[in-house]
Amino acid sequence: MRWWGKLLGGTFGYMLGGPLGAILGVVLGHTFDRGFSATLSFNPAANTERVQTAFFTTTFLVMGHLAKADGRVSESEIKAAQFIMDQMQLSPEQKKVAIELFNEGKAPEFELDPVIDQFKRECGRRRNLEQMFLEILIATAMADGELADLEKEMLLKICKKLGFSHIAFERLVAMIQAHQHSSQGAGQQPRFKSIDDAYAMLGIESSATDSEVKKSYRKLMSQHHPDKLVARGLPEEMIKLATEKTQDIKAAYEEIKKTRDMR
Image 1 (cartoon, rainbow, N blue to C red):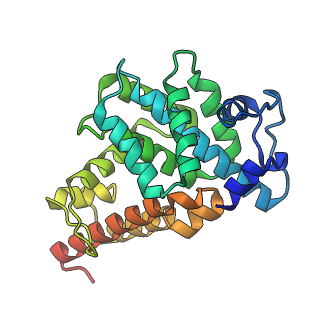
Image 2 (tube, helix red, strand yellow):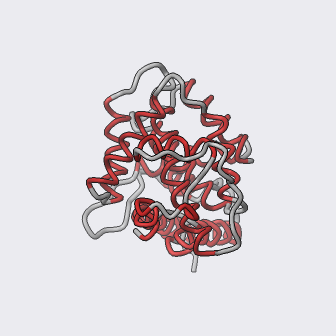
């Protein structure tokens, strides 16, 4: 939670300028210069905490904007946002800020493009972080079990801005669907309804070779490794989301191995 302490402490070296800084300033009751430099310093610790602030701010802003994409915010979308906040075990103060950011994202005057543009700049080359951001958004949009046309259109626009292809987007959607189809008991690994869901979780077809299965598994585990993501700028509070994803990936791999009699 170090980044949060820096944020509230007003250490401007860790703060954001641009549209993210302006909106965050309004939410926190501070005044920041909208034109404040968004260029990262050469201090790795400062960079990480700044990216954590950008990730937290952008996630809840865009989550709110996405929820309003079809003209109304459904109960399931509100519950999905609250579920993510609960998983993050936010403090009452953090939760209040997250809710206010969500509401700012719903506002008619909210501008998506500059927010995503700045988020991309802040992330730099942290591709895995951008993917985690997309996975959270897609999961929120699909909280009611489906992806509305307007939600899909907006998500594809965000993907394009972040440099993710249409094919990459469809794979992420399939992964989220597979997760929704899985069941997990206390202290148990997730179980998938079908082997097709296990393949979708790994982003591959059932026709993939054993070598391709292993390669995809290793790549996904590396992309979602909680410690690596936090080191790259994922807020510590979101580590549970990353851990849950690695459990899904591992469970899918084990089911495929069992079906194929792989070693």
